[in-house]
Length: 107
Image 1 (cartoon, rainbow, N blue to C red):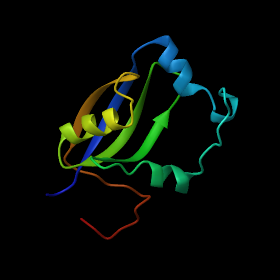
Image 2: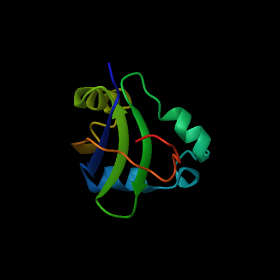
Image 3: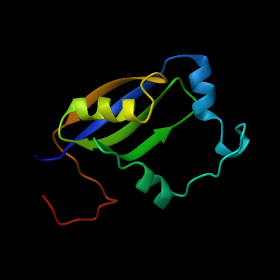
């Protein structure tokens, strides 16, 4: 099947989940190494869906760009990564995706 693009709004389920998610990896107990973009991209390819981009601030929500065959695959991937208890997700199908980062000749 064809992969489709989705923008997701993820909202934290609690202040505790927000704090855990936003705590820098090196400040966690125990500390873990921070991933560079290549490592993050490799880790973001799941069995059901792939997260291509993420935008995270200090708010109660953040955004991600996903590719999957359908919305259920994104929900399944969040569950596989044990994130479905940490965030509520609103999925927006995108029928057009253009990006200067791709720098392609595709129409």
